[in-house]
Image 1 (cartoon, rainbow, N blue to C red):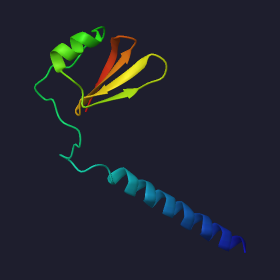
Image 2 (cartoon, rainbow, N blue to C red; image 1 turned 180 degrees about the horizontal axis):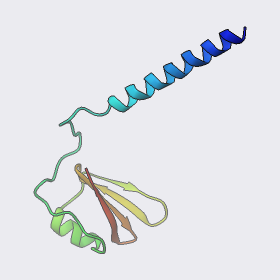
Image 3 (cartoon, rainbow, N blue to C red; image 1 turned 90 degrees about the vertical axis):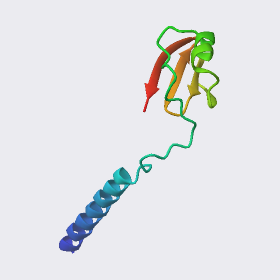
Length: 93
C-alpha cells in the first residue's frame, strides 16, 4: 500500500512538471501581435504629461483604468503607465 502511494506521488509530480513545461513553451507565436504597432514613434519618458504623450506618440490603441489615479495606455509594442497626469514608467516588448 505504501508503494502505491509513492508511485501515485511520483506520477502526479511528473504530470505537473510536464504541464508546466508545456505552459512555458505554449506562449504566443513569434511575430503575432494583435494590437497595432508603433515602431517609428518615440517611447514616452518618465515625467512627461498626457498631452506631451498624445502630441509625440498619438492616440493609444486602448486605455485601461488603474487603481486610484493611475491609467495605462496601450500602444501595441509598449504600454505607458500614468500616475495622475504624468508618465510613471513605460514597458516595451
